[in-house]
Length: 197
Length: 197
Image (cartoon, rainbow over all chains, first blue to last red; front, side, top):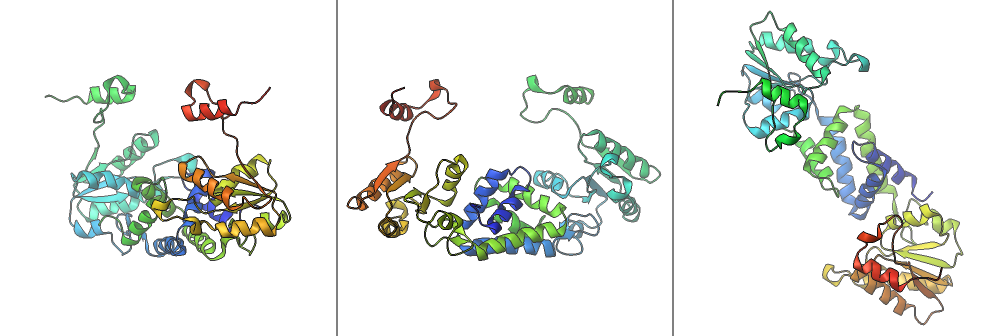
C-alpha cells in the first residue's frame, strides 16, 4: 500500500469526525506529519488528558475536571435552571451575557426509536434539583424538533405539582434575516408572538 | 472559565489544523467527548504511533514505517523518477494508475524569502540518484507557481550534463471545464500546446 499502516489508521480516525471526509482527513494527517514531531505528540497528549480528566459535572452534567463545574460553583444558590440538550448549547447563552443562572444538560431529547426514553435523560435528577434547590424557573432551551417539543412537555408535566414555572425561548425572526426568505413555521410563530411597540 | 483547561487545550490543537476554525474545533472536541472514552484514547494512540513510526523513506522521502517505502521496494530498478513537492502529491498519480515509476519528494520549492534554497530541497540526493540508478527520465511535477517554475529550471540545469531527460506535465484545459470560464494563462498554454487530431 501507498500509505504506511499507522498513517492509514490515523487518517481513518480523523475521517470519523463529523464533517470531515476522507480527503480532508488525509490533509490533516499529512499536515501534522510536516510539522515537528513534538506537535503530534502534544496533540496525542491533549487527547489523552481530556479523556482522563474531563467528565460531566455531578450536578449539571456540563464538562469539568472537578466534581462540580465552575458554573455550579460560582452561581450556587441561583434560582433558575436552563435545560439544554448538550454541553455546547451553553455557549450562546454565556456569549450573550444575558443569563447568570444554572444549567442542566439532558444529554439528548426523547426519541423512542433511538432508545432514548425518560430514564436516559436524567429527568429524576432534574426534578430532584428543582425540589432541593427551590428552583423558581426552568428555561427549557431544547430546539424545535418534534422530539424536543415532547421532551419539554414531559418536563413541564413532571414538575407541574412543584412551585416552579417552565418557560421556553421566544420563537420569531432572527436578527439580520431577510423577511422574504423566512420559512412558514418561523413566520407563524413570529406572527402569533407579536408584541406591542 | 466555562471550559475545563484540558478541553480548552484540545480545542486549540484542533483549531491549529488547516481549514479548522475555533467553532469547528470545539465541535470536534465535544463530539469526541460524547463518544466512549476508548475512542478518544485510540485517537491519541494513533497520533502517538504515527509520530513514533512514520518517517521519510531514505530514498524518495515518501512516508514509511521502514527504511524504504513500499514504492521504492516494489519498483526498484525503474528508470523514471517523478519529482513532487510533498508526499500527498503522489496520490493523483497512483489513483490514475498511469505511472509505475519511482518518486522523489523535494519537500518544497525554491523560495528565498522563506529561506528555502537548493540545500533545503535535497537536490544533491536527487542528482545522486539520477547517476547511481541510471535514471532515464525525470518528470518534474511541481505545480505552476513562479517558485515551482524556477525550481524546475534549476533541476533541469543540475542534470544537464547527465543522460537524463527532464519532462513536465502537459498544461491545458482540465476535464469537464467550461471553455467560457477558462482563465487566460490556461488558455495560452492550451493554445500553444495544441495537437493534431
